[in-house]
Amino acid sequence: MAEQTPVLAMLKSFLDVNNNSLYRFARYDPNSLRFWVAAVSMQLARIYGNDSQYLAAFPLITENLPKAEVPATFIQRTEQLSRLIEDLEAAISNSVSPLRGRRIFIGHGHSPLWRELKDFIADRLRLPWDEFNREEVAGYTTSERLQTMLSQAAFAFLIMTAEEEHRDATVHARPNVIHEVGLFQGRLGLQRAIVLLEEGCSEFSNIRGLTYIGFPRGDIAARFENVRRVLEREKLL
Image 1 (cartoon, rainbow, N blue to C red):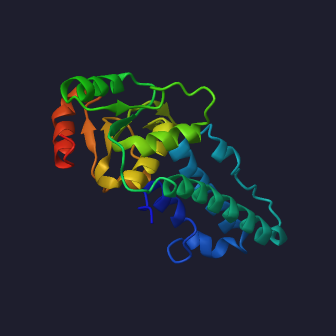
Image 2 (cartoon, one colour):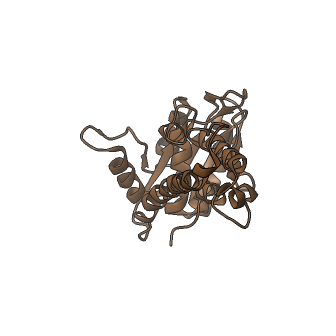
Image 3 (tube, helix red, strand yellow):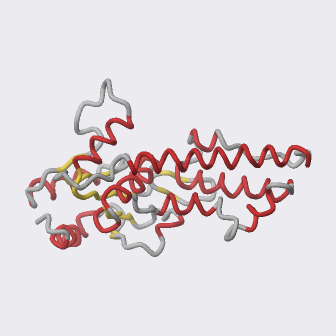
C-alpha cells in the first residue's frame, strides 16, 4: 500500500469523525457545515492556490442555506472531497511498483534556481536527472508525463520557492510543486523525496515536523553539500 503523504493526511483529516468536531455536526447543522466547507476550502487554497479548479469546484456555502438542505449538501461536499482524495491516491498507487528508475527528479516552479541544482547533479555528481519539461510533452496529458517521471525516478528533490502571494500576505510555492511533493513521497517514500524549502516560503500545513532542507532566499547552492550527503545516504553516489 502506498505510504500516506502529508497532503493526503491533511485532506483525510477533514473526513475523520473522531478528530474533526465540525465534521461530526456538519451533517445536520447549517453553521457547522458552512464552517467545515470554509475550512476545507482554505486548505485547498493553501495547497493548490486561489485560482485552482479544485477550489472553484468547492465554493463556500451562504449563510441562508435552509436546514432541510443540509444533509444532501453535506453528502455532496464529502463525496467531492473523497473523490479528490481518491484521485491523488490513484496517481500514487499506480506507481508503487519496485523502484526501477535511476533519474533524480527535480520539481520546481518558475524560479530559475532549479537549473543550479540540475547543473550540480549532472555536472558535479554525474547523475542522470529529469524535470517535467525536459522531454517533449506535446500529445501527452499531464498525468501521462507524471507517470513516466514517477516510473523513471530513483530520487526526487522538490524545490519550494516563494512565488505565490496569498491574500493573507503569505508567500507559497507553486501548486504544481506541492502536488509533486505528494506524488513523489508516495512513490519513493519520505527518505527519497526531499523538499528544498526557500527562506520566506510558507510551509503547507502537514510538512511541519518532516525533514526538509531549508536554504537562504535565492541561494540554493548554499545547500549543495546537504544534497550530496543525502544522495550518499541513499547510496546513489
